[in-house]
Length: 192
Image (tube, rainbow, N blue to C red; front, side, top):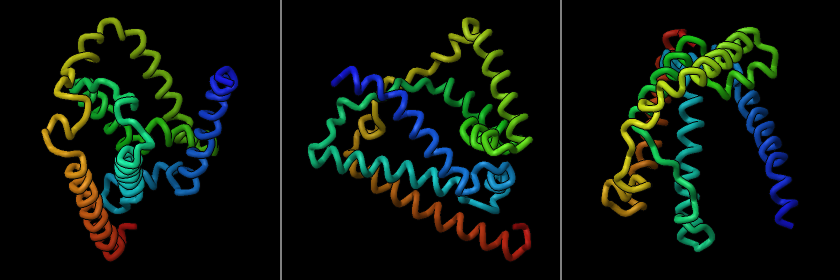
């Protein structure tokens, strides 16, 4: 039985990937125009979807943990390296703002035949290849700033997890209201 489950892992991952890509395309996230509108503050759809996913997952895992269904200690949390996250986030953000795609949405655009997504995806592959070639020289950067103050934000802050979740939900509500205000303002100005 374990062999069957191990063998089905890649298939399940592939099916989930196709499902995720389908949902992204149906939401319009395979279009660079839709994605760059986030940076112009005229369409907050991407931010709303991603923030909703984060909040839903965090609250859902907490609920499953409280119900005794999931053991939080068994959930793998990778060690964050703050400098690598900052540099990588800045580079991906710059590419996202210029090209209109992140790695995932470029794959969605590629599969739907968008020329700009194809160019972006080829650039992503070339950049990954170049990075891999320089990886030994960059190893110090990729492991700099190891976050060692506990695996999770509540431990680092020294507060109960539910308090972090309340702040997260409140932040999500605030962002939805702020995003809605920016979207209405852009529609009124004819920017959409």
